[in-house]
Amino acid sequence: MSTSILIVEDDITFSLMLKTWLGKKGFQVNTVSSVAHARRELTNNEYDLVLSDRRLPDEDGMQLLMWMNKKNIACPLIIMTSYADIQSAVQAMKCGASDYISKPVQPDELLKKIKEALQGGSSKTETPAPQVQTSSGNSTSLLNPQNFLEGESEAARQLYNYVRLVAPTHMSVLINGASGTGKEYVARKIHQLSKRADKPFIAIDCGSIPKELAASEFFGHIKGSFTGAITDKTGAFIEANGGTLFLDEIGNLSYDVQIQLLRALQERHIRPIGSTKEIEVDVRVISATNENLESAIMKGNFREDLYHRINEFTLRMPSLRERQEDILLFANFFLDQANRELERNLIGFDAQASEALQHYSWPGNLRQLKNVVKRATLLAQGRYITLQDIGSELNENETVNTASSLCLRNEKHEKQQILDALRQTNNNKSKAAILLGIDRKTLYNKLKLYDIQ
Image 1 (cartoon, one colour):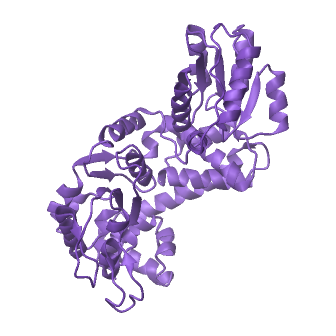
Image 2 (cartoon, rainbow, N blue to C red):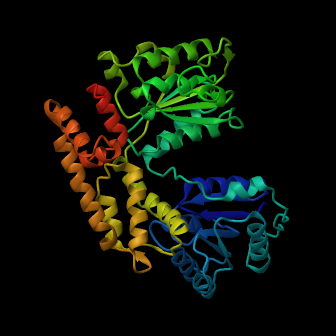
Image 3 (cartoon, rainbow, N blue to C red):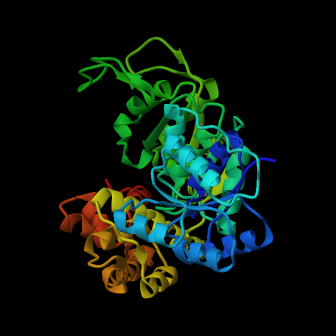
C-alpha cells in the first residue's frame, strides 16, 4: 500500500503540479483548497501525512493543525508557506507540526522532510516512504508557484475544462473576454498543454501596432526595403514557426492587414517585405479580443472569412465578478507575489478588508485586483491588510468606473469626449485612457471605431 498524502493548498496550479510530481515519486495524493474541506477529508479518510499551506482562504493552516490535535488525528503535518521566518517556524513546531518548509519548495528538501516526518510520526502504514532522489532542474521549476491561479469557481472549472480539451488539438482558438481577465495566460496555458509546448510562444498586441508597420511585425523585412529598415527583421510568423502565435486584441487590425493575415494563414507561406522568397511556416494561431467581432463584421470592420479562420473554437473569459468565490483566492495569491516583490511579510487580509474585496464589482478584473493588492501591501503598517489600506483605492476606482460608464454611454458625445481627453493630454493615449476611466486597449478600439488618427 502506497503512502497517502493530503495537500491543503489554495494555489490550484501549484497544488496540481505538486500532486503530479509526488504521484510520480510513488505517493498517493489528494488535494483540497481550504481548512473546511481538509477537515471533512480527514474525518472521512485516513492519511499518512498532511502538507498544508500556512495561509488559506477560510482559516489559518495552524488552526487545522490544532483541530487535528483536538480530534486526535495522529498523522504528521508539514506546514508550507511563502513567508519563511523564525517566528512562524517556532509557532508551527509548538503547535505540533512535524516540520516547516518555505516556498518555492525545493524537491530534495521536501522529499527529505516527508521521509523524516513519516519515520518519526505515527503513520499507519508500514510501507517505507519513497527514497529521496536527486532532482533535476525541471523538478525544481515544476514545484515553483506559477504566476497565475486558475480558481475554483464553477465558471473557472468550465473554462479550464475547455482549455484542456482544445489544447492538444490543432484548432485555432478565439478567446473572448473583458480587459484584465487573463486572456494571455489562457493562451499560454493552451500552448503549454499542446503538442507544440517545446516550440516558441510569440505574443503580439495588435492594438499597439501602427498600420504601416503591421506587415513588418508579422512577416519581417529585408534591410533597405523601406525608409527606416536599417537592419533585417524577423517577423512574428517566423519566430513562432512550429509553435503558437498569440494575437491579442485582433479586432484592432486594419482591414488591409486582415487580408494579409488571412492569406498567410490560408497559404501557410509568408514573404518578408523586400524579399522575393516565400517561407513556409507552421503556426497555431490563438487570438483574443474584448470586442464583439460579429458586430464588427456587420459594420464592415472585420473580415468574416478571417473570423472563421481564427475561430474554430471559442473560449469566453468570465469576469471577476462572475467568480466571486475566487476573489479571496486571487487576492491571497497576489499578496504572495507582492510580498516577494516588495520584500514584505504580510500574513493576509483582516475580516473587513476581505469582505470589501468580495463585494466590490472589479471593473478592471484581475489586473485591477492585482494592482490594489500590491498597493495595499506597500501601504500596510501591520501584519494584515486592513480596510484602510485598500478602502480608498476601491472607492476611487469605483468612482472612476461610474464616471467612465456615464462618460462613454452616449455615443453621440463619445467621440468628442475622446478628442477632448487626447487634447488635454497632448495626445498621450495612456493618460487619456486614465482620464476617461477606460483601459488603453478599449481606447484603441474607440479610436478605430471613430476613425480618430
